[in-house]
Image (cartoon, rainbow, N blue to C red; front, side, top):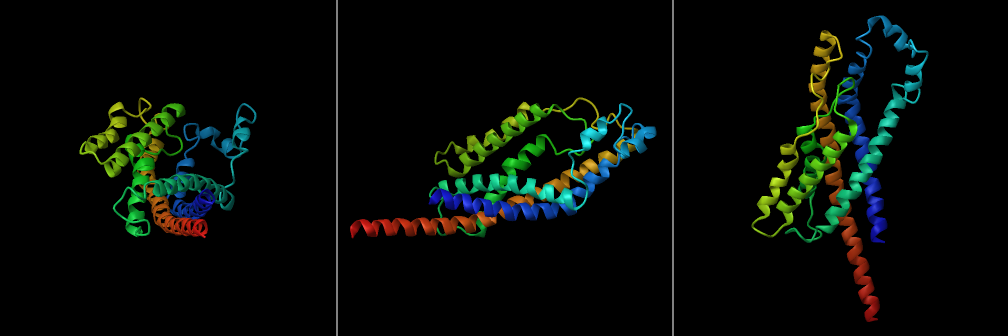
Length: 262
């Protein structure tokens, strides 16, 4: 019963958060990505018309590579919404389980959680899964030259785990040494994130590189806003879901106790 409730509310939270973040991305992030994509092939002006039609000198490699991609407009927005919703559902399940598991470790009673607690949990999720990794490894737009994907994924996970452990120790540990645990947040940044050596857009012509540098800076800010909207929704709706789960769980416990006495 409890498991089904947590999963149900996590799916509901993810659906709502996915819709909100998709709207924010459509306004804030997507225009920057589309602007960056216009510079694809800028290093080979003579080939740009052919690449725009999905052709290459080699006889169709670009066409094969782009065949899977959704078309711009509604199709692309739909795929983005699906991706965002699936991701948000995973985060929602994680947040809801953490909220439920730690509800007795705070000074608030089970039913005393309010929107402030939601904002705190949302801020914690934002810090763990976006802010801390982004400080060492900012989000990058298309055409940016980056370190190998596997190295970036490993460091992202390392940063998220260290940040989560540091914040959890600071919030829930009872020992006066809990402040030392907060130093775990710094460990990934002392180790250092993987980065490609050289300029971010070294393969692009100077004018295109300068324009892409400006877009890259805008992209970081836009991504920060989009991810903030995701975690605000997850935190606030998570508190609402937690209250309903706790009330339902307490009622079931009382009914079972009453039945056993009868």
